[in-house]
Image (tube, rainbow, N blue to C red; front, side, top):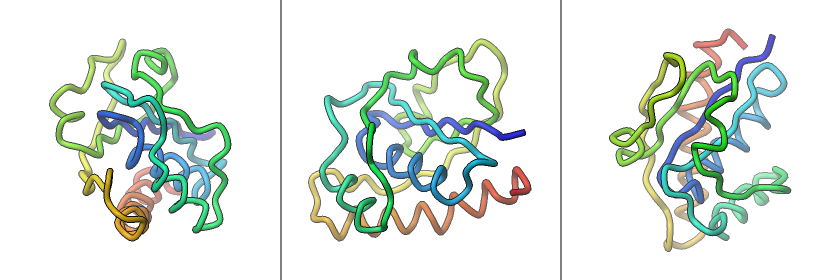
Amino acid sequence: MSKTVLILCTGNSCRSQMAEVLINHDLGPGVRAISAGTRPQPKVADGAIAALQQGGMSTDGLYPKDVDAVMNEAIDLVVTVCDNAKESCPIFPRPIPSIHMPFHDPHGEPLESFIKVRDEIRAKLIPELKQRFGV
């Protein structure tokens, strides 16, 4: 039975989107990731798309979503990847375990910053989820 992880950020345009794609790429189908933001931006950052594509991952269909859009999903774990999302993390209809794993926000920085954050997410978050869910 697969586990569903919600990656929560403020804008849902950089870190949470990269984490969603990395988890689905590296841990699917045992772990399914979705992402959302407490204040979603109009679009996913170009640098995030470029960093994922450079890593050989599909970015089809990525768009920022409001956390309200995923409230009724059967979520097994919430991961907040920015301090602001941790502070304003919504109250879900049922108790859901959560972990806070902040990553640098590369928004507005060169592509190298996005690649560095992508690699940090892969190095820190993927092993944590593997251990937690035994995948």
